[in-house]
Amino acid sequence: MAQWYGIRVGISSRMWQRTVGHGTHTRPLDLSAFPPPRTVVIFAVSGTESMATIVCVDDDPAVAVVVEHTLSKLGHRPLVHSSIEDALQAVARTSVDLIIADYGRPTPGGIELLRKLEQRGLGVPVIIMTGQSSVENAVASIEKGAIDYVAMPIRPETLRITVNRALEIVRLRQENETLRAELGRLESTADGSVFNLDELERSAIGRALTATGGNRTRAAKLLGISERTLRNKLNTPKLATPRS
Image 1 (cartoon, rainbow, N blue to C red):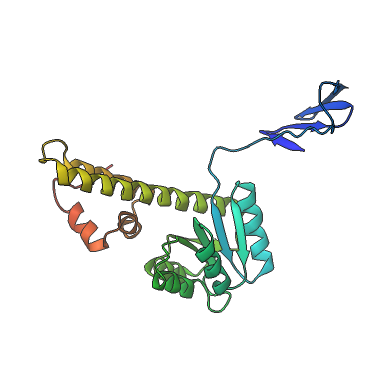
Image 2 (cartoon, rainbow, N blue to C red):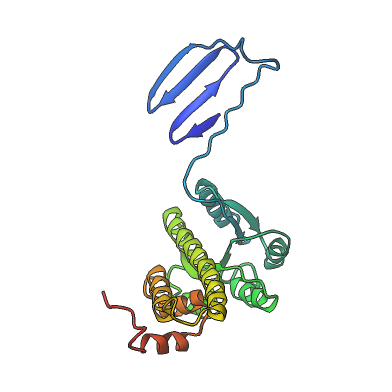
């Protein structure tokens, strides 16, 4: 059974069936044109976002099931692990786009995972799952390097928004790295009159602040600079982003 934006198409040996909404219509299908074996396979792709490989670390099966199901419905590839060591091994052998980890479970939890990722030079962004009232844990997670956090109990819609936002930040970060490389190349060959570096830097800062909802800590991480450096750049008149 294949699905294409709400339209299901099923093929049997003698009948064609199409279901749209609540209506079903059938009619005979002549399969004589198909060579044996008489098997028809229809491939369909749904959704517009590219699939991401996302590791989930939690030793609570109930949480893991919700996260895995939600990510699968979004078209992503979830890899569920019950320990941070298993997750680190997965990151080492697989191209992982994002990690979702519980703040304190399993022991050690997400904060230790952040430390080990940094220690091993693995720049995979991490979303930390925290208790609904654990503001301190959420702040600590961001300070330790998490790209975002999501409150528990996990709500599929909240998780969807958080994951999409994190992946967009990752995309912008990669774009920024590409831009930096290109600027470095141009800077080494141009006399400075071909383009305006201040304008390009201002644009990059503005996009980073927009992507992070104005959060300077996250924007600085996205740009690959310290928060102090970002603050200094924003205080420079020619680089200050326009106020909305």
